[in-house]
Amino acid sequence: AHLMRPRESCGASVAAVATRTSAPSLDLGIVPANGAQAKPGRPHVTVNSYGPAASRAARALWIVHELGIPFEHIAMEMKDLKGADYLKINPNGKVPTLVDGDFKLFESMAINLYLAAKHNKDGFMPASLEDQALCNQWSFWGMTEVEKPLLTILIDMFMTAPDKRKPDAVADSQKALPKPFAVLNGAPQGRDYLLGSTFTVADLNLASICSWARAMRTVRPARLERSLIASPHRATASG
Image 1 (cartoon, one colour):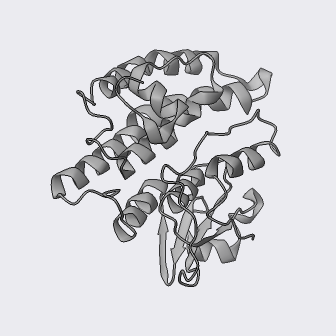
Image 2 (tube, rainbow, N blue to C red):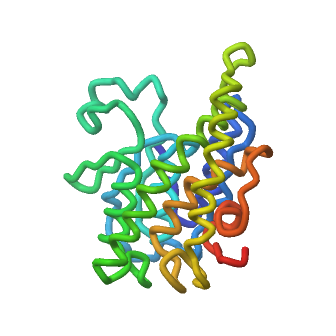
């Protein structure tokens, strides 16, 4: 385990891990929108984030940087995920996992929504129940409508041996993406961000998914989702 201090950009940490893999750089270009840094006198670190940065754990790493939450990053080796000690924390044997004091939580979107609610500042988790529901909506929508086809293409292009690739699955995924991207393009309706003029956990969670497309030259998303990919903390309708 090593301590990843909040002053380090999450994008840099993702790039550092990605360079040690067989895949090309998967730097998501993620940096805190508010330039958050740890401040003197912060409480003792109680938040532990488990999982390699070049995985869905990147979302949790981004949000702790974004909100300036003191934390320890335990990168984990894949071979250790089925070990008895880790299975006590996450019985699924997968990443990411969050340990916050005595509280344990898995699933990347659940982790981010929890941290956004607990460490909220500057409206990162909106106050109204309706806007909180929209944060949930866009987070889950991204997972169900966008992530699977993006990862199907990414894994086939960069993480699969040539003789094991599935061009039909890639083609189907490429055909599937325009529909959800069209939904996303129509969402802002003149707003700067998904919910209005403020960058929220909805934008972060969705950008963390769309950012996988940075490595794919065959995926050409337009307008809002292109902005999310290029500069997640400045996604605008005119991007």
